[in-house]
Length: 307
Image 1 (cartoon, rainbow, N blue to C red):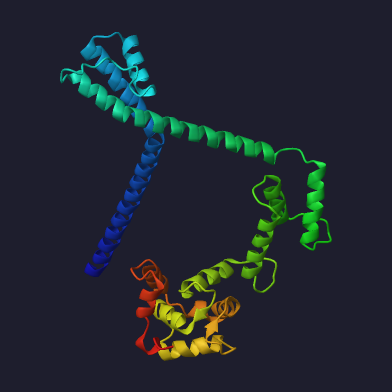
Image 2 (cartoon, rainbow, N blue to C red):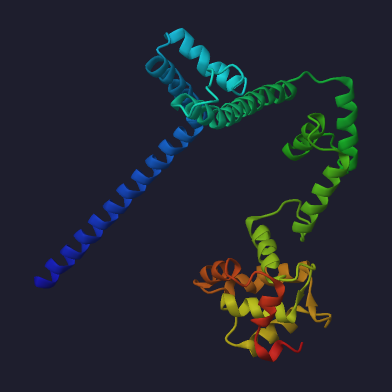
């Protein structure tokens, strides 16, 4: 019975911890959301506060009316102080210091805020313009280009899939040209190593892993690179087994592995050999201090440094 009570206490404790964790995550999410909303209006709020400071100075210190104080605050910022209050060059007065401080920082605040507003307006009208282009009625030139696009994709059914439609719209919206489309198709074909006409998440993962193994970024994986990363990921029991895996992938005996050979190995057995903790070690290794080739090669197993 005591054991059952202990189990109940443990379960209750875990429940409380889980609830507290969820509440903390909700609070953190709400705080981040509030901060982002505040950040979005911060430039405008800062400018309004600065103008209000100028108005308060005019009414309280100079004894001006509200209209004159607002005029002072606005003209001091928009004319870089040319229309600010008169200063006394022969005496060290509060007005001299205030005007210098107010104009020096206020002009920067005003300029940056106006730039922020202009940027937001530009983004808004750019989105409206893009939306209008997307819904613009088709013309004869569009039909000619669509026929050319189908011809380049070697399709004889004269039908557009979503992919072809995206290519068509990218060119129509002047977001890409024909050469860019060819580059995109070439990149797709690199990932679609089995020529299936589509790629999978596993294909993308294999490409990502290839980039991790290719430390020198020369398009091939050398023996040192392969053994080093396998050791970091926990693939293979020791370096001898990792060398055997490398030689099994390197069918041509060139001492290097290309993308296609690596992808085939990764799909067939490499992914299955990755321990549960391998991903964590991979992240630590990739984001660690050894960020350049020389440091990583220096960290390679000593028996491979002569390879």
